[in-house]
Image (cartoon, rainbow, N blue to C red):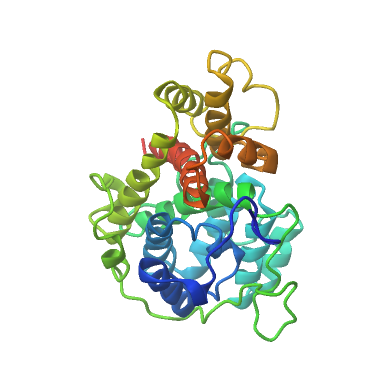
Length: 334
């Protein structure tokens, strides 16, 4: 069952949240924005929420790199995903950062006049899509982890959002002085907060993790990324071994890059039973073409086992999305 603003699941509202989920909501509300649909969409899985928020916060909100530049990276990744919700969100962020002309320029499809910002935007937009080879990152040094973490989180969250938010939904200006486009539209918090790195790490206690990636240079971003990847990987357990193998193979074949919707899934899933195909299809589409996931896909998959829940739905979508991200990460950091 879904809400009007979030497909496939019933979100947990902030006043009903408890435990880890309540802690995540409180941190997001204090440090980033009010709790809109793009935050609540993963609420049936507090562990995915915690790991995802940790990566976003440690990469995009804390650290040394300028907020403007990280917003440009996120905007470029949103463009790569073609997700109107996030494109509009980060254009609004640019305006709230005092750069309305920059936002207007990018919205028209023109490159920023600042060559550094233009290079960041073009690099981010070149990643994670089948039609382009990723450009060489236009940065190095300690702040590289912040740009990479911002990019990889955006590829993850945009895939989940494309699957779970209604087509055409946009967040509006996110300015508290403006009329919101819908009830519960997000309002951005002050953008000049000096946030201490690592404050989200206690949320990750007890979650599965792995060795942090070398590009994170020992920073909390690496712990957050490794925890999100390991936690999302548990979603493969919702598939049979044959379905999980097929899903992983298709996502790897395309290096996690976004594809246009088509019949390219028919052949690689042809050896699976009908029930197995349902789960594998959702996982693969979450990775490569999440906007193609329909209510019918999710309903049919959940009908194969009465134990499948909203938590399972979020977990399967996160598994597909983050599996794609791990291939993107490997390609751009090789």
